[in-house]
Length: 492
RNA sequence: GGCGAGUUGGCGGAGUGGUUACGCAGCGGAUUGCAAAUCCGUGUACAGGAGUUCGAUUCUCCUACUCGCCUCCA
Image 1 (cartoon, rainbow, N blue to C red):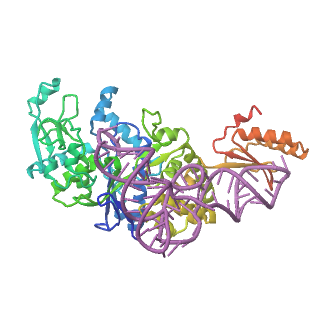
Image 2: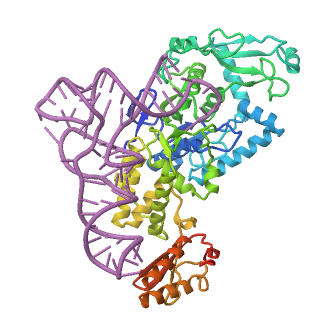
Image 3: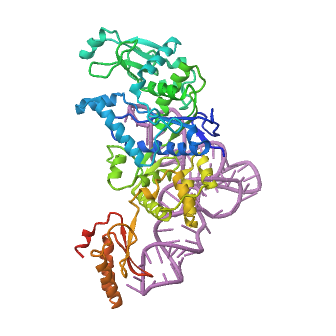
């Protein structure tokens, strides 16, 4: 079984051959921890979770290393701290915890170093400042980066504080690295003519980017050869990837919005510092998320977090299902309709597989689909066929492979069936003897009296409360959804 | 403006140089007092134009449209 993946670096679907099958290594850009993860943040997590699971399936749980960082030093975090009056550490700690909880809710496994050591596999940028500084020094020594003194007097107190230490920016020099732009399909000339040059005193070229920048007194800072300051964006991923995965590794993933400049810059830094041809063999990028056909944005009012959905009662499994129903390289549209369909499907699959022992062997078709550039929509359709054929064992294994939490560990999909005759109840929750059974009896009486108009009217009322009323071979039956509130019956 | 992705039946969404996607909805049937659920059955879909070909939804080119990224962003 050969996995094929679309490699952004070559723009082609290629067979995946690991550098070391004993330790397949993947790095995925993680969040900047300053706020709850929004729904779009969940997409790469779920996409690469599927890949992680597939790799573990193919190469073995103990032969895959997956690293996903937390960027806990960033100007957005500083801004959040300033406006809220909270400490940076408070914000990053809390947000990191939220992120772990929310991603667990959508079924994402935690990254790991060969199936273990989860903490190390989720490195915090602030724990790798020394590595970043070392890499920057290396880049300067090799002539790929240069320092530039900043001017003073344009800012407040902090300027004086830094002045004594003579802080300097350390820039990466783009034109020294000829392959710059290959990943994102741009040339340096194009990018420069594309105008918008970034601010940055002492830059030699508008495309050069900052590796290290001095901090004002209210910004977090670390001692460095260039005075007290903090790392620029990009360098943290290069430093952490090198420390944990080596100079060259197998797969680097992230959203396609990161392709430029973030990943382009990572490649430039890492390859120049490490003297390597490639940073990663495969670059994978997922497409963006939309909501009801439009870009999710605060200005459009369609912005929401994973936690918002969970709190609204959309189970994490449903979120996962909706994400998997669109291929990762296509824009995905989150709609209420899709969530509804996903919930219905999962409910029926969970009913079918509850308490069932999963079969030992995964469907070849399913593995085939996933191996073909993570064709999760096809994988789900195969699961549909398996479900229709009634092989609960196989379905369960397939669902596990795609990362759906086992039904035994969940309750949201459960229903309880209440029958009239023996007041037998299929679930473990209360029997609704007093709440529901009298209505079933009344319905039955009306029907036996052939007063169908009244019987139907009663049924409609009952169904408005969420119950499903039917007449089975064992008599009148009510299917009660999980979390049913009997007080809804009071007005009937 | 620069770069890129996409346009498949009512909706969502795979895939293929000639043959069934799959799901939801719809329709017909079984069943039902009627329904629900379930089961069975059912749909002359591939943006437009030109080209390559024995044959294209599938390859090439052009046009139109949609969308995303380029700014913090996954």
